[in-house]
Image (cartoon, rainbow, N blue to C red; front, side, top):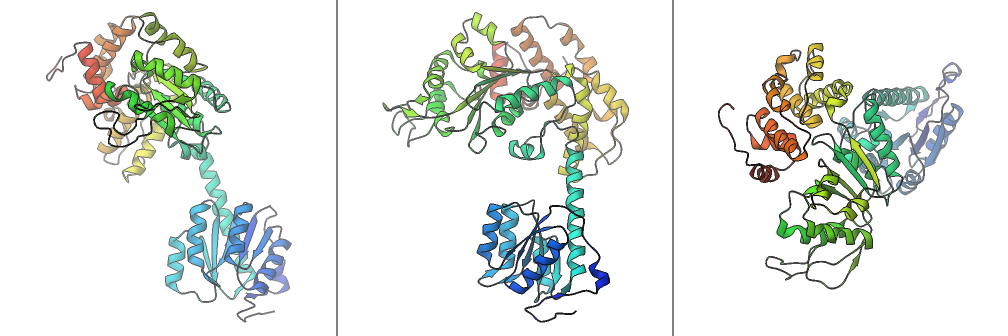
Length: 483
């Protein structure tokens, strides 16, 4: 039976063709077309072949269905009364990027096809079409979705977080070691208690902010602000204003009211990096804000209520700083409800290979290059390297190797692991003293970066200004030539 009129746009097949059926599943299809006979007939066909099908005859009806129910595939007419199908296509692909769309039309031209594909349609069918045509189009879409899911599983093989969580935190968290899996387990537990403060410790470059972001975006606060603050990068004169805000005219330069970190993080998370560098006088005010969940802007007398969560991080021994009267014990107790320690990369060498492969693939894609093969000797050499800059140093090292690569395999010569032997005299001189360790680590990083302050600061995970302050503190002088 052939039905070729505008209002009856599906061509029926012979009995032999009708025997062909789709795989049985719960694949959900929304048919959005103003021709009721068309949607009814296609609905019946899909239902008979094991699909869940839903009809809509206006744009508003279709968009209402999408808000209420997860749809795997939208079959969309390009012309609807009072609406442009291409505008609807654009809207649904922005709101529901995982949903696929097949465009159908009795008035299609090549320009329309091209526009539809550019807007994200997976296929285009011109009316009238046969049942077998829509069958092939849907099967093709199912295969595409299956391969897409398979690729996601491959990509997540060494990733400890889901793709959706990775997209929200803007980071990729890779590892296979028992230590890093234990860290993630505690982080996911912390995310379930969205009012509990968390202290993250570990050397520079281990990924403390990544963990903080995972905790926030896996929690009930995920739809509100995550604000990262480097405590050592804010000048002493502005610290109080930055945290608590200020009223217009409260000091020279205060030309307008300003909200502070605590207020803008209402219902969200405030991440305090390098918490050990916070001045003592500000620590007392931070403690009170955490206890009361109320703050008073500079130059104001009225208190403002704000509900924030604190996640803090440091690479210092806070207990030692308490003994030296440089950090408040009562503030530690408030910050340290849950403690997560990130081990350095040298203590989990089994994570080096998956991290290296991920960074190589990521940078190759970023720089529009083919992902290079990596010699086995590289992995062995990197496992013998101390990585004073931890994961951040491996990332920078890989970026440099990809930039300078000529398309061939990457060998040991592409990675500066030879720096270990040059810097051994620094490593051997490190004692079990926090301040001496910090001084020697800065010297080692400077040496490895050929005394480039910007590169050194990146490896150490601090700002260039913070590096300069620490160099002055330890009386470290830049050396231009040799040691």
